[in-house]
Length: 279
Image 1 (cartoon, rainbow, N blue to C red):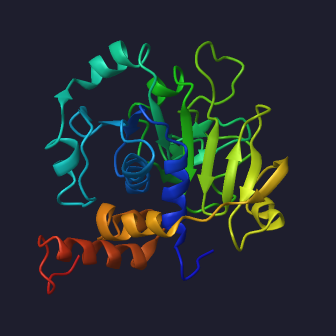
Image 2: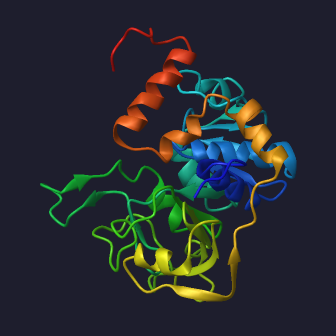
Image 3: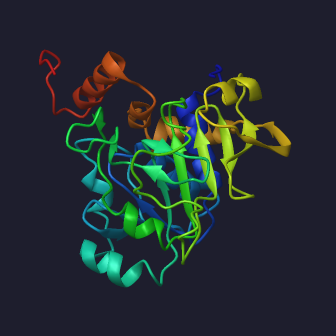
Protein backbone atom coordinates (compact mmCIF):
# COMPACT_ATOMS: atom_id res chain seq x y z
CA UNK A 1 0.00 0.00 0.00
CA UNK A 2 3.01 2.35 0.20
CA UNK A 3 5.88 3.16 -2.12
CA UNK A 4 9.06 5.20 -1.80
CA UNK A 5 7.24 8.04 -3.59
CA UNK A 6 4.26 8.44 -1.23
CA UNK A 7 2.52 6.95 1.79
CA UNK A 8 -1.11 5.88 2.11
CA UNK A 9 -2.02 8.89 4.27
CA UNK A 10 -0.66 11.14 1.53
CA UNK A 11 -2.68 9.32 -1.13
CA UNK A 12 -5.88 9.69 0.93
CA UNK A 13 -5.23 13.41 1.46
CA UNK A 14 -4.60 13.87 -2.27
CA UNK A 15 -7.82 12.01 -3.16
CA UNK A 16 -9.74 14.25 -0.76
CA UNK A 17 -8.18 17.30 -2.42
CA UNK A 18 -9.29 16.06 -5.85
CA UNK A 19 -12.94 16.24 -4.70
CA UNK A 20 -12.64 19.97 -4.00
CA UNK A 21 -13.73 22.55 -6.57
CA UNK A 22 -12.60 26.16 -6.62
CA UNK A 23 -15.00 28.27 -4.56
CA UNK A 24 -16.25 25.37 -2.41
CA UNK A 25 -17.27 25.95 1.20
CA UNK A 26 -15.51 23.09 3.00
CA UNK A 27 -16.65 21.98 6.44
CA UNK A 28 -14.07 20.56 8.83
CA UNK A 29 -15.09 18.36 11.75
CA UNK A 30 -13.25 17.52 14.96
CA UNK A 31 -9.97 15.56 14.93
CA UNK A 32 -9.90 14.93 11.17
CA UNK A 33 -6.39 15.94 10.07
CA UNK A 34 -6.49 13.89 6.86
CA UNK A 35 -9.43 16.00 5.73
CA UNK A 36 -7.73 19.25 6.77
CA UNK A 37 -4.58 18.26 4.89
CA UNK A 38 -6.62 17.48 1.76
CA UNK A 39 -8.56 20.75 1.96
CA UNK A 40 -5.44 22.87 2.36
CA UNK A 41 -3.71 20.95 -0.44
CA UNK A 42 -6.64 21.72 -2.75
CA UNK A 43 -6.45 25.41 -1.87
CA UNK A 44 -2.69 25.46 -2.46
CA UNK A 45 -3.04 23.84 -5.89
CA UNK A 46 -6.27 24.05 -7.91
CA UNK A 47 -8.86 25.68 -5.58
CA UNK A 48 -7.41 29.00 -4.33
CA UNK A 49 -10.88 30.39 -3.61
CA UNK A 50 -12.02 27.57 -1.33
CA UNK A 51 -13.27 28.53 2.13
CA UNK A 52 -13.00 26.46 5.30
CA UNK A 53 -15.73 26.24 7.95
CA UNK A 54 -14.82 24.50 11.19
CA UNK A 55 -16.57 23.05 14.21
CA UNK A 56 -13.65 24.48 16.21
CA UNK A 57 -14.85 27.99 17.00
CA UNK A 58 -17.57 27.83 14.32
CA UNK A 59 -15.35 30.03 12.16
CA UNK A 60 -15.05 30.63 8.41
CA UNK A 61 -11.45 30.78 7.18
CA UNK A 62 -9.79 31.39 3.83
CA UNK A 63 -6.23 31.53 5.02
CA UNK A 64 -4.36 28.40 6.09
CA UNK A 65 -1.81 27.26 8.68
CA UNK A 66 0.35 24.17 8.98
CA UNK A 67 -1.38 21.35 10.85
CA UNK A 68 -0.68 20.80 14.52
CA UNK A 69 -2.27 19.49 17.69
CA UNK A 70 -1.44 22.08 20.35
CA UNK A 71 -1.52 24.75 17.62
CA UNK A 72 -4.76 23.65 15.89
CA UNK A 73 -6.52 26.89 16.77
CA UNK A 74 -3.95 28.88 14.77
CA UNK A 75 -6.02 27.99 11.72
CA UNK A 76 -9.61 27.61 12.87
CA UNK A 77 -9.77 30.44 15.40
CA UNK A 78 -6.72 32.62 14.79
CA UNK A 79 -7.43 33.11 11.08
CA UNK A 80 -11.24 33.18 11.21
CA UNK A 81 -12.93 35.83 9.04
CA UNK A 82 -16.14 35.46 11.04
CA UNK A 83 -17.62 33.27 13.75
CA UNK A 84 -21.14 32.07 14.43
CA UNK A 85 -22.91 29.80 16.89
CA UNK A 86 -23.41 26.11 16.12
CA UNK A 87 -27.20 26.55 16.42
CA UNK A 88 -27.17 29.36 13.86
CA UNK A 89 -24.92 27.35 11.59
CA UNK A 90 -27.28 24.36 11.59
CA UNK A 91 -30.59 26.23 11.57
CA UNK A 92 -29.80 29.15 9.28
CA UNK A 93 -26.85 28.30 7.05
CA UNK A 94 -27.00 24.59 6.24
CA UNK A 95 -30.39 24.66 4.48
CA UNK A 96 -29.31 27.45 2.09
CA UNK A 97 -25.50 27.33 1.70
CA UNK A 98 -24.03 24.28 -0.08
CA UNK A 99 -21.28 22.88 2.13
CA UNK A 100 -18.98 20.01 1.23
CA UNK A 101 -17.90 17.82 4.15
CA UNK A 102 -16.04 14.55 4.71
CA UNK A 103 -17.27 12.34 7.57
CA UNK A 104 -15.45 9.35 9.05
CA UNK A 105 -18.06 6.62 9.83
CA UNK A 106 -17.74 3.99 12.55
CA UNK A 107 -20.02 1.76 10.46
CA UNK A 108 -21.43 2.14 6.96
CA UNK A 109 -23.94 0.06 5.00
CA UNK A 110 -24.34 -0.50 1.23
CA UNK A 111 -26.69 2.50 0.86
CA UNK A 112 -24.28 4.88 2.60
CA UNK A 113 -26.17 5.11 5.91
CA UNK A 114 -23.60 5.43 8.67
CA UNK A 115 -23.17 5.14 12.41
CA UNK A 116 -21.03 7.21 14.78
CA UNK A 117 -22.99 6.41 17.97
CA UNK A 118 -22.01 2.94 19.21
CA UNK A 119 -21.18 -0.60 18.12
CA UNK A 120 -23.80 -2.98 19.46
CA UNK A 121 -27.55 -2.50 19.74
CA UNK A 122 -27.59 -2.13 23.55
CA UNK A 123 -26.98 1.58 23.94
CA UNK A 124 -26.62 1.30 27.73
CA UNK A 125 -23.88 -1.33 27.46
CA UNK A 126 -22.52 -1.17 23.89
CA UNK A 127 -19.53 -3.20 22.77
CA UNK A 128 -17.85 0.08 21.79
CA UNK A 129 -19.01 3.65 22.23
CA UNK A 130 -18.10 5.81 19.22
CA UNK A 131 -17.18 9.53 19.34
CA UNK A 132 -20.76 10.72 18.79
CA UNK A 133 -22.79 12.37 16.06
CA UNK A 134 -22.16 16.12 16.65
CA UNK A 135 -23.76 17.81 13.62
CA UNK A 136 -23.98 14.69 11.42
CA UNK A 137 -27.78 14.23 11.70
CA UNK A 138 -28.30 17.90 10.79
CA UNK A 139 -25.86 17.96 7.87
CA UNK A 140 -26.62 14.56 6.36
CA UNK A 141 -30.36 15.19 5.88
CA UNK A 142 -29.73 18.38 3.87
CA UNK A 143 -26.40 17.87 2.10
CA UNK A 144 -25.95 16.87 -1.51
CA UNK A 145 -22.15 17.27 -1.25
CA UNK A 146 -21.45 14.69 1.45
CA UNK A 147 -18.34 12.51 1.25
CA UNK A 148 -16.90 9.82 3.54
CA UNK A 149 -13.44 8.50 4.36
CA UNK A 150 -12.20 5.36 6.11
CA UNK A 151 -8.46 5.27 6.91
CA UNK A 152 -8.51 1.55 7.82
CA UNK A 153 -10.85 -0.47 5.58
CA UNK A 154 -12.38 -3.52 7.32
CA UNK A 155 -15.50 -5.68 7.56
CA UNK A 156 -16.11 -4.20 11.02
CA UNK A 157 -16.79 -0.82 9.37
CA UNK A 158 -18.44 -1.89 6.10
CA UNK A 159 -21.45 -3.82 7.38
CA UNK A 160 -24.77 -5.06 5.90
CA UNK A 161 -26.73 -2.99 8.44
CA UNK A 162 -25.59 -0.27 10.82
CA UNK A 163 -26.33 -0.73 14.52
CA UNK A 164 -27.48 2.90 14.84
CA UNK A 165 -28.37 5.45 12.17
CA UNK A 166 -26.67 8.80 12.68
CA UNK A 167 -25.86 9.78 9.07
CA UNK A 168 -28.54 9.46 6.38
CA UNK A 169 -27.45 7.77 3.16
CA UNK A 170 -29.45 6.83 0.07
CA UNK A 171 -32.46 6.16 2.26
CA UNK A 172 -36.13 5.95 1.15
CA UNK A 173 -37.10 8.38 3.91
CA UNK A 174 -34.87 11.12 2.52
CA UNK A 175 -36.72 14.30 1.49
CA UNK A 176 -33.82 16.70 0.83
CA UNK A 177 -30.26 16.44 -0.41
CA UNK A 178 -28.73 13.10 -1.28
CA UNK A 179 -26.69 10.36 0.28
CA UNK A 180 -22.88 10.39 0.08
CA UNK A 181 -21.47 10.49 -3.43
CA UNK A 182 -17.82 9.61 -2.74
CA UNK A 183 -15.77 7.53 -0.29
CA UNK A 184 -12.01 7.12 -0.01
CA UNK A 185 -10.40 4.35 2.06
CA UNK A 186 -6.87 3.02 2.37
CA UNK A 187 -7.75 0.43 -0.29
CA UNK A 188 -9.74 2.29 -2.94
CA UNK A 189 -12.28 4.86 -4.09
CA UNK A 190 -16.05 4.36 -4.21
CA UNK A 191 -19.27 6.07 -5.30
CA UNK A 192 -23.04 5.49 -5.12
CA UNK A 193 -23.89 6.02 -8.80
CA UNK A 194 -26.75 3.51 -8.55
CA UNK A 195 -27.63 4.14 -4.90
CA UNK A 196 -25.37 1.29 -3.73
CA UNK A 197 -21.70 1.45 -2.84
CA UNK A 198 -19.56 0.88 -5.94
CA UNK A 199 -15.80 0.43 -6.34
CA UNK A 200 -14.42 2.88 -8.90
CA UNK A 201 -10.67 2.66 -8.26
CA UNK A 202 -8.24 0.45 -6.34
CA UNK A 203 -4.99 1.76 -4.88
CA UNK A 204 -1.58 0.51 -5.96
CA UNK A 205 -0.98 -2.86 -4.29
CA UNK A 206 -4.68 -3.54 -3.65
CA UNK A 207 -6.90 -5.81 -5.73
CA UNK A 208 -10.63 -5.99 -6.33
CA UNK A 209 -10.67 -9.39 -4.60
CA UNK A 210 -8.90 -8.08 -1.49
CA UNK A 211 -11.20 -5.06 -1.24
CA UNK A 212 -14.27 -7.28 -1.52
CA UNK A 213 -12.89 -9.64 1.14
CA UNK A 214 -12.50 -6.71 3.55
CA UNK A 215 -16.05 -5.46 2.90
CA UNK A 216 -18.99 -7.04 4.74
CA UNK A 217 -21.39 -6.83 1.82
CA UNK A 218 -21.30 -7.32 -1.95
CA UNK A 219 -19.81 -4.35 -3.76
CA UNK A 220 -20.84 -3.11 -7.15
CA UNK A 221 -17.86 -2.76 -9.49
CA UNK A 222 -17.71 0.11 -11.96
CA UNK A 223 -17.26 -0.99 -15.59
CA UNK A 224 -14.22 1.28 -15.90
CA UNK A 225 -12.67 0.42 -12.51
CA UNK A 226 -8.98 1.35 -12.57
CA UNK A 227 -5.93 1.99 -10.42
CA UNK A 228 -6.01 5.23 -8.42
CA UNK A 229 -3.77 7.87 -10.03
CA UNK A 230 -0.81 8.49 -7.69
CA UNK A 231 0.03 11.85 -6.11
CA UNK A 232 2.34 14.16 -7.98
CA UNK A 233 5.79 14.96 -6.60
CA UNK A 234 4.63 18.52 -5.88
CA UNK A 235 1.56 17.35 -3.95
CA UNK A 236 3.77 15.13 -1.77
CA UNK A 237 6.25 17.97 -1.23
CA UNK A 238 3.49 20.36 -0.16
CA UNK A 239 2.10 17.85 2.33
CA UNK A 240 5.45 16.94 3.84
CA UNK A 241 7.19 20.32 3.88
CA UNK A 242 4.49 22.98 4.17
CA UNK A 243 1.01 21.73 5.02
CA UNK A 244 1.82 19.00 7.56
CA UNK A 245 5.54 18.74 8.33
CA UNK A 246 4.74 17.16 11.73
CA UNK A 247 2.78 14.32 10.09
CA UNK A 248 -0.42 14.94 12.07
CA UNK A 249 -2.39 13.32 9.21
CA UNK A 250 -0.72 9.96 9.97
CA UNK A 251 -2.54 9.68 13.31
CA UNK A 252 -5.70 8.57 11.47
CA UNK A 253 -3.99 5.61 9.82
CA UNK A 254 -2.21 4.38 12.96
CA UNK A 255 -3.56 2.43 15.93
CA UNK A 256 -2.43 1.30 19.38
CA UNK A 257 1.14 1.98 20.48
CA UNK A 258 2.18 3.26 17.05
CA UNK A 259 -0.45 6.00 17.27
CA UNK A 260 0.50 6.83 20.87
CA UNK A 261 4.19 7.08 19.99
CA UNK A 262 3.54 9.31 16.98
CA UNK A 263 1.25 11.57 19.03
CA UNK A 264 3.98 11.91 21.64
CA UNK A 265 6.52 12.75 18.91
CA UNK A 266 4.29 15.52 17.56
CA UNK A 267 3.74 17.07 20.99
CA UNK A 268 7.50 17.03 21.65
CA UNK A 269 8.12 18.76 18.31
CA UNK A 270 5.51 21.39 19.22
CA UNK A 271 7.32 22.03 22.50
CA UNK A 272 4.40 21.19 24.79
CA UNK A 273 5.72 17.82 26.01
CA UNK A 274 9.15 17.19 27.48
CA UNK A 275 10.99 14.25 25.88
CA UNK A 276 11.31 12.68 29.32
CA UNK A 277 7.57 12.80 30.04
CA UNK A 278 5.40 9.73 29.66
CA UNK A 279 1.95 9.71 28.06
